[in-house]
Image (tube, rainbow, N blue to C red; front, side, top):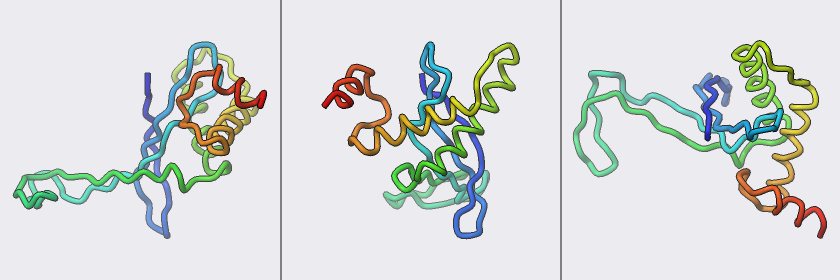
Length: 132
Protein backbone atom coordinates (compact mmCIF):
# COMPACT_ATOMS: atom_id res chain seq x y z
CA UNK A 1 0.00 0.00 0.00
CA UNK A 2 1.41 3.37 -1.02
CA UNK A 3 1.80 5.95 1.69
CA UNK A 4 2.38 9.65 1.25
CA UNK A 5 4.78 11.92 3.13
CA UNK A 6 4.18 15.64 2.71
CA UNK A 7 7.14 17.95 3.03
CA UNK A 8 8.65 20.99 1.34
CA UNK A 9 11.42 21.37 -1.20
CA UNK A 10 13.41 24.39 -2.31
CA UNK A 11 13.59 24.88 -6.08
CA UNK A 12 15.48 27.90 -7.41
CA UNK A 13 15.05 29.73 -4.13
CA UNK A 14 11.30 29.16 -3.90
CA UNK A 15 9.70 26.81 -1.40
CA UNK A 16 7.23 24.27 -2.83
CA UNK A 17 5.08 21.56 -1.31
CA UNK A 18 6.42 18.09 -2.12
CA UNK A 19 4.70 14.73 -1.84
CA UNK A 20 6.82 11.59 -1.47
CA UNK A 21 5.13 8.29 -2.34
CA UNK A 22 6.62 5.38 -0.43
CA UNK A 23 5.88 2.02 1.05
CA UNK A 24 7.05 0.12 4.08
CA UNK A 25 7.02 -3.51 3.04
CA UNK A 26 6.15 -6.04 5.69
CA UNK A 27 9.34 -7.04 7.45
CA UNK A 28 11.40 -4.19 5.97
CA UNK A 29 12.80 -1.50 8.23
CA UNK A 30 13.29 1.13 5.56
CA UNK A 31 11.02 3.08 3.20
CA UNK A 32 10.82 2.14 -0.46
CA UNK A 33 10.48 5.46 -2.25
CA UNK A 34 8.51 5.29 -5.49
CA UNK A 35 8.32 8.91 -6.48
CA UNK A 36 8.49 12.56 -5.54
CA UNK A 37 6.07 15.17 -6.84
CA UNK A 38 6.14 18.93 -6.48
CA UNK A 39 2.67 20.33 -5.89
CA UNK A 40 1.75 23.95 -6.54
CA UNK A 41 -1.63 25.55 -6.08
CA UNK A 42 -2.43 27.59 -9.19
CA UNK A 43 -5.92 28.75 -8.22
CA UNK A 44 -7.35 29.31 -4.76
CA UNK A 45 -10.74 28.10 -3.57
CA UNK A 46 -13.44 30.33 -5.01
CA UNK A 47 -11.21 31.50 -7.85
CA UNK A 48 -11.80 30.64 -11.49
CA UNK A 49 -9.53 29.08 -14.10
CA UNK A 50 -9.57 27.43 -17.50
CA UNK A 51 -8.72 23.74 -17.86
CA UNK A 52 -6.43 22.34 -20.55
CA UNK A 53 -9.58 21.71 -22.63
CA UNK A 54 -10.60 25.36 -22.32
CA UNK A 55 -13.41 24.70 -19.86
CA UNK A 56 -14.16 27.34 -17.21
CA UNK A 57 -14.03 25.96 -13.65
CA UNK A 58 -14.08 27.07 -10.06
CA UNK A 59 -10.93 26.56 -7.90
CA UNK A 60 -8.97 25.31 -6.19
CA UNK A 61 -6.56 23.97 -8.80
CA UNK A 62 -3.19 22.28 -8.36
CA UNK A 63 -0.32 21.31 -10.65
CA UNK A 64 1.61 18.11 -9.83
CA UNK A 65 5.03 17.62 -11.42
CA UNK A 66 7.08 14.47 -10.88
CA UNK A 67 10.74 15.24 -10.13
CA UNK A 68 11.65 11.65 -9.32
CA UNK A 69 14.07 11.20 -12.21
CA UNK A 70 15.90 14.44 -11.35
CA UNK A 71 16.89 13.35 -7.84
CA UNK A 72 20.16 11.80 -6.77
CA UNK A 73 21.04 9.57 -3.81
CA UNK A 74 21.78 12.49 -1.45
CA UNK A 75 18.37 14.01 -2.08
CA UNK A 76 16.63 10.66 -1.65
CA UNK A 77 18.53 10.28 1.64
CA UNK A 78 16.98 13.51 2.92
CA UNK A 79 13.48 12.26 2.10
CA UNK A 80 14.23 8.81 3.56
CA UNK A 81 15.45 10.36 6.81
CA UNK A 82 12.31 12.50 7.09
CA UNK A 83 10.06 9.47 6.46
CA UNK A 84 11.92 7.33 9.00
CA UNK A 85 11.65 10.09 11.62
CA UNK A 86 7.91 10.47 10.93
CA UNK A 87 7.37 6.68 11.19
CA UNK A 88 9.24 6.59 14.51
CA UNK A 89 7.06 9.42 15.86
CA UNK A 90 3.89 7.54 14.84
CA UNK A 91 5.03 4.17 16.21
CA UNK A 92 6.85 4.95 19.43
CA UNK A 93 7.31 1.26 20.27
CA UNK A 94 9.09 0.55 16.95
CA UNK A 95 12.85 0.20 16.82
CA UNK A 96 14.50 1.30 13.62
CA UNK A 97 18.23 1.76 13.17
CA UNK A 98 17.99 5.12 11.37
CA UNK A 99 21.44 4.99 9.76
CA UNK A 100 20.94 1.45 8.43
CA UNK A 101 17.41 2.22 7.23
CA UNK A 102 18.61 5.29 5.34
CA UNK A 103 21.50 3.33 3.80
CA UNK A 104 19.17 0.49 2.75
CA UNK A 105 16.72 2.95 1.20
CA UNK A 106 19.49 4.63 -0.81
CA UNK A 107 20.93 1.27 -1.94
CA UNK A 108 17.54 0.13 -3.22
CA UNK A 109 16.98 3.49 -4.94
CA UNK A 110 20.38 3.33 -6.66
CA UNK A 111 19.87 -0.29 -7.67
CA UNK A 112 16.54 0.44 -9.33
CA UNK A 113 17.93 3.51 -11.13
CA UNK A 114 21.06 1.73 -12.39
CA UNK A 115 19.16 -1.35 -13.59
CA UNK A 116 16.21 0.41 -15.18
CA UNK A 117 13.64 -1.03 -12.78
CA UNK A 118 10.82 0.93 -11.30
CA UNK A 119 11.09 0.99 -7.51
CA UNK A 120 8.28 -1.56 -7.23
CA UNK A 121 10.00 -4.71 -8.44
CA UNK A 122 9.75 -8.13 -6.82
CA UNK A 123 12.74 -9.30 -4.74
CA UNK A 124 13.42 -12.26 -7.07
CA UNK A 125 14.12 -9.79 -9.92
CA UNK A 126 16.74 -8.12 -7.73
CA UNK A 127 18.40 -11.44 -6.89
CA UNK A 128 18.40 -12.37 -10.57
CA UNK A 129 19.97 -9.04 -11.61
CA UNK A 130 22.59 -9.16 -8.85
CA UNK A 131 23.60 -12.69 -9.87
CA UNK A 132 24.16 -11.63 -13.51
